[in-house]
Structures are given as structure tokens and as C-alpha cells.
Figure 1 (cartoon, rainbow, N blue to C red):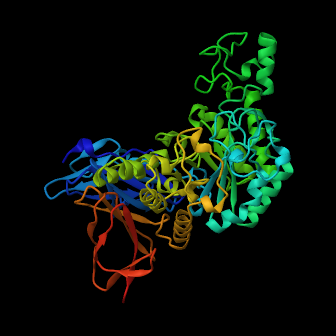
Figure 2 (figure 1 turned 135 degrees about the vertical axis):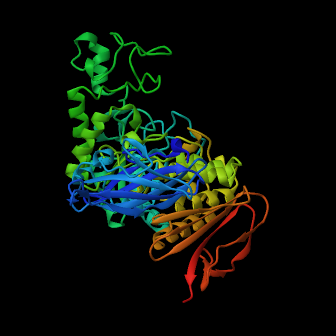
Length: 582
């Protein structure tokens, strides 16, 4: 047995609590070694006649990738504590794996075993339960709808009159969003994520001037209050975007440092290399976001900065009842600040959603003490790798499995999943205008655990290259909208809402495919089993479904029965429900 491939740590992806009396335990073993894994567990103080009263529970094979088999089980702890180890057995060998390493016989000394000293309620990761059933819609406010021209900047251009540029304005505002809430409700949207709405100089508003004021070109506090109230009436949650990594150039404390240098009371709010500040040139003499001189980095370790930003975070939750915060450039702010941030807003509203903008593996922020979730760009990459970049179905399965096994199931359930955003090219453009592949990718996205998001305009076929191209004005002329794509996404959203195994399932099982272009997997809850099959190739493929006695399959999109062998057209997919006949 390859001992180097047997891995268990007490980090969050291998050990996490579902309550103070139950833990989920995972372990990795080398792929394909034909092992059985049993966990030996018990209360460390439960002894009888000099013997530790341990229980043995067989673990279940959860997933497989290119290197590992992943095993999992839940373990109850009546007294909120546990010692545990693993028995790993093949036909020819038995090993016991504990905190101290490997044994060929079960160790008698309890101190050798892994220890969970006490499971406190405060250590249970409990994300807002509403998030996993939410379908988000991302709005870039300046480009969604102009509902009140009296708010327009002086340089406002006619709506959609030319391609967007970094410094152009078209007059989008919060009034325009209010006027189209019924449209979003009909689409099936249950959450809106707004890019920043606070006073700023630019059209994107990531250069904040005043964190406690709505940008006057978007509206005022009454406008936002109406927007949130009307959204809530329609069952739509509202998440705002906070930029706490950096401020804008015209943020009053930064202006004070520019003007007064060493004598400024705010000089320690930022990270100057030297004073006076020199914003001009390729590299300013102070820390910024990237090297953008108009976005000076905030010193979140400074007590006054922390107090100010935490006041901002609590103000919009307490006074306006927002449902979530999306946190810009979250991985460049210190962890201690985010812990304080979480305590601040969760004490005001327990089920507020905290979402970090992080583009890479994010375990350090997802331990239950900082964020509920992150923007799931690695999932985006895995989906597009298969659908658009000729990645084989095997490699796609490996990428998707590694991603799922990186986090506890409770984290995966509330991750923010998307195909594009204001920071990327639109999915139709990335897909080279291939609508069939766009639909295929959305079906993949919606089938995975997490909270899917549609970027404004994708549902009616908008295209656009990277910023600023992806930030064009929403097309409201129905004659120019792609009604087929709109109908498709409306149906996809409805299916996800009405079928528990569509994205919020208990189990996911990948079927091995002999065809590198065909990806298929099965999801299930206690009441439902769904089968997803995708064909990204330019050829029709013959598909054979798994079949047991007294079972048949139904296509969820057509609501027609499906035989166990069928032809799957090029660049298409099927979502099939298992129907039991007895």
C-alpha cells in the first residue's frame, strides 16, 4: 500500500462540524488501490474494564480524481468530543493510520489517535440557509437602465449610442432597477448583486469618495430603501459591493494627506513609502490597488480605519436591511480585519451573506471565521476548460472533483458560481458567439452546488470583450433581444428551483466516459435522482444510461420519456430524471 498517498489533516476540508454533536471526516487514499476504509472513533473518556469503548464505522467512497480516492462519513459525538483513527485494508494488507502515523496493529494507546478535544457551537460553519437556493443577477448600475434622467452626469451619452469606454456615462441608476424588478422576478431571479453604488468619481464606482452616501447619479438613500423594500416584496435579496482594500483618490482622508503630508491626521490611514505623496508617474510612492494611483490602499490594521470601515459595514445592514456584502479585492485585506467584519455584521443580522472576491483557492478565508463564500472563478475555469478549450471529460472530472474536495460541503453549497462578470469577457463572446455552448455551460453551472449568477444581459444574448466591452448598456429593445436564450434561462432557473437534485443534492457521482467529449454525472437526494450528460463535440454521440430493474428516465426539458440508449446531438446536453415504476 502506498502510504504517501494516504492523507488526513484536521484542516477544514478533511474535518468539519455540522453541529456540536456531529462531524464530517474525510480521508484521501491512492486512487485505485482497492482499499476499504473504516474510521475508529469514540469519546476519549469512555472506558470500560480498562478498554476504550471505540466504534468502527465504514467510510463511503465520495469522489475520485487522477491521484486520489476521497472517503467520507459523518460521526456523532454525544458529548461533543472525539478521538479517532483509520483502518485501511486491502486484500493483502491492513494499516492503522493515526496522528502518530501508521501501525500494522491497532494501537492500544488512545493518545496516538487524532483528537477533536471539544466541538463548540461557535465552530460550526453555518452559512445563511437561503443562499443555496438563490439565483443571482449581477447588475452594473451605470449600464442597466436609466430610470431618472434628472440624475444624469453632465457628460451622459444617449443610451447605448456607442460602445462603452472606461470614462463614458450612459445614465444608469437605481430608479431604473426599480422599474425592472418585475422583469427580474419573471426571469426567476431571487438575488441581485450590485457592483458599488456609493459616491465615486468613475462609472464603475470602485474608487469610493464617500462610503456613507449613495452616488448622486444613482439616487439617494430613499431610492435605495425603496429598491430594497420592493425587492424583498418580490422575494429578491440584495447584496452590495464594499471596497475596503482601497479608497478613491477623492476620498476625504486621502485628500487630506495629499494636502498636508506629515501633518495630516490621516497619514497612517494609508501606506506611504514617503511624504509628500507623489501620485503622478508609473509607480506612485504609496501602496495602491495594483499600481493605480487613484486607488490608494487602506491600512486596515489602523484602529481608526477599522472603526470607520466597520461603521460603514454595519450602517447599510442596520439601516437598510441589505442581505449581503460582496467584498472587493478581499484577499489583499488582512484576515484579522475580516474576522472583526464578520462579527460586526453577523451580530446585526445573523443570515447576512459575506462573499469575498478571490480568484484562487480560498481555504484560508473559508474556515467559518471570515467569509461564507467566494466568487467561484476556479469553477468557471473548469467549466470553460471542458466546453471551450477541448479539455477531455476525464480532465474536466478531475478538475471539478479537486474543486469540490477543496472545501466542506457546507461551503460548496453557498459558493457564488458564475460564467462571467464585469471583470471578464461575456460568456457569449468567450464562446465565440456559439449559443449552443453557452447553454451547455449554463446547464453545467446550474447543476453544481452553489448559488448561480447571471450577469445582466447574458439572458438576452449580449456580447462583449473584457472591460470595458463587457459593460455595455442593457438592451431593452425587445426586437434586439435573443428571446430563445431568455426562454432557455427562464426554464433552467425554474427547473433548478423545483428539483432538489438540481444543484442542492446530497450526492454527486461521476460516470467514467470512454469519449473525451462526453461528460456525464448523476446527482441525488433522498427523493430524486438526476442524470446530466454533456456533448461539447461537433459530432452526434450515442449515450447509454445506467439501468436497473423497474426504472425509466424522463427528460426534464421536454417532459418526455427517454430510452436508456439515445443519440445526443452535437454541442448539446440532456437533464434526465429517474422515474421509478414500482
